[in-house]
Image (cartoon, rainbow, N blue to C red):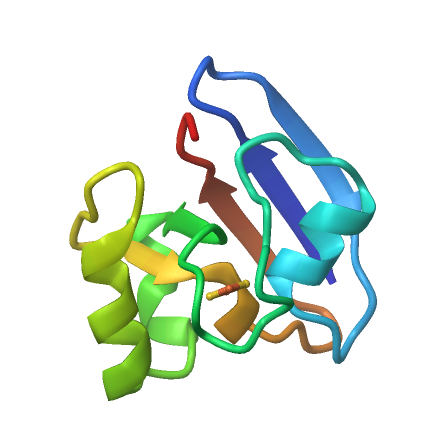
Length: 103
Ligand code: FES
């Protein structure tokens, strides 16, 4: 699985992830700016907020109620393509593009 992270300044880095890991875990391990993952993926911090490229949204598992609720508490306001990256698990062969918020 390959993930392209673009930060709020437009810098893109491409990271090869491991199937089964979440996008948040991959970002934290590689020091991607803008993703903190404070709660370790237990849906209680919202510091793993990302914007998913619009045409890839449908390929992700739909968001559950708790994620939706947590997205109202992000540092940078949510948008229609907002997701919490700890809830996005990588599968083999997948390619994702996400933009990380400033904070
Ligand atoms: Fe805390 Fe995703 S890491 S909600």
